[in-house]
Image (cartoon, rainbow, N blue to C red):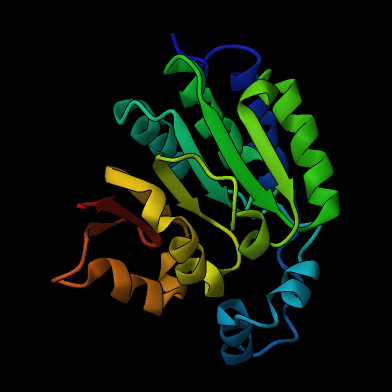
Length: 218
């Protein structure tokens, strides 16, 4: 029995995934594929672009959620950093692993106020609020300071153009053997170049079609 598969988390996550499945598609149909890709990768226009998507769920998949739980549990994680809380689905998976590991701290960051409110509600409903430090604002600022001395797992699931910048914020705290998971990594070629570099400090491979899992080597 695990926190993830028992109440209140199990039924809450199922309900949240059902709501996400029933939610409307992103309202970017007026954008060309090229313009949408440009905005997704932008380092300067991400606030406006994601503001247009503020009511959309955009959660990790069920499979990715379970992967996050498994990676956090198997690495005995006690300190986790998450970029992009959204409505808190991935946060609940990671915090469930912390609970089953005996406790810890999950720092997560989100800049959209309406999503912050919903995420806090969902995390409280899951009974995991004591493990989660939800920081409101731009992660370039909220993750600049007051991080754990050692970070066991980093999840990148916010504005795609900032993945390298957020990694730069956290990298010196990642212990050897720490895990970095990047959702929608196919939208971040510069990030993939970084973690897949043959002479770099990561061992990295894709999971599914758009998730990259990397191991910090040193």
